[in-house]
Each structure stands twice: as structure tokens, then as C-alpha cells.
Amino acid sequence: MVSAVRLIRSSQLSDVAQYAYAATADKDSRLIFLAGACPLEDDGSTAAVGDYAGQAARCIETLTLALDAAGATIEDVISTRVLVASSRQPDLVAAWNVVRDAFGDHDVPSTLLGVTVLGYADQLVEIEAVAAVVD
Image (cartoon, rainbow, N blue to C red):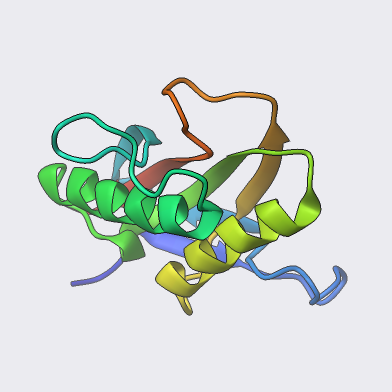
């Protein structure tokens, strides 16, 4: 299947960032706006309490299921925003490493943010995403 997403890189920008700096979608693509993927178990409890990487992994699982329900895959994601309830950079990096590994070579433009609190009890990580598919 041909992807609607085109990742954009620039030799004028640092190559230290672990993601493309921009992305576009084909004009005939359908955009999918996903709610923030939370680290919730099927019973509604928070997964991996106290574990940034564990919660990021559960968020990726949730995101993948939501993408599937919308007729998309992780390779159709055009951008992400990773929210981490911490002011400590190592906590943000722990979550980011899981996200980066999940996306692999499809290194979409992303923003990693430290926030004060997230919506569910014991929640440390949430991942927002936008995807684009050609129907």
C-alpha cells in the first residue's frame, strides 16, 4: 500500500533530532485525528504504575489499536506529541525511547513535552497522533 505521508528532512537543520522536521500528506488523503492514547488496561486501570517506559509501551499498544479501528497503521502517522508527567529529562527520555523504537524508520515529526499532570490516576504518559491514509 502506498503511504499518503511524506517525511521532510533538511540538510540545513541538525541531524541530532530523532525525527523528521516536517511531514505532508497527499491532497487526496483522509486525515485521522486520534485522541491521546493513554496507558489504560481493559478494565480502565492504569498500566505500569510508576514506570514511564511501561506506560509509553501501553500507549503505543492503545495507539496501534485506535489506528487499526480507523483503517490505518503506525506507518500512516504524520505527527505525534508525547506528553510525560515529569519535570525530569530522564523520565521524558525513557518514554521517548519507547516511542522512537516503536516508530523505527518512520520517524515522524514529534514533540516531547513534560507536563504537570495527566487525566487518569497514576498516569505518566499520553501520546497524541495524527495520521493520513489514501482510501
